[in-house]
Image (cartoon, rainbow, N blue to C red; front, side):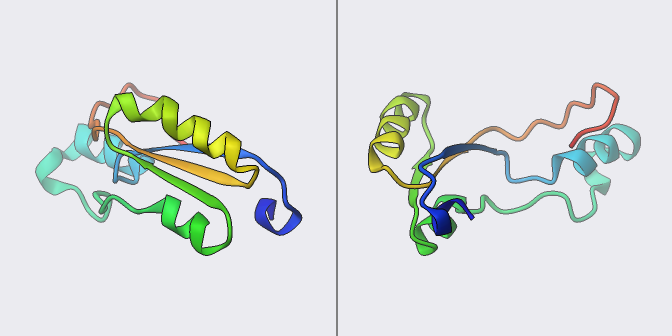
Amino acid sequence: TAIRFGFPIVGVVGNDAAWGQMMRPQAAYFGKEKLVATELAYTRYDKVVEAMGGHGEHVTEPEQIRPALERAFESGKAACVNVEIERNYEFKGGIYV
């Protein structure tokens, strides 16, 4: 929708290659070795946005974040900054969404 209507918004994805809202409770209750369908590949959300006509940035190192954000804002397009982060199995209780 943002691309279709030309809204120059910038979204940042903290990409841990997991379905965290299900993975963390599963790991806590059953152990990491019994996870079911929650560990994923690092999806290139930036490429999806580019394919739709927006601006995409892929970040793998902390020092790349600021330049990626600057380029995303300067693009004047709807943008996705896809930041690969470490997968975290810690479950602190509550509901993850």
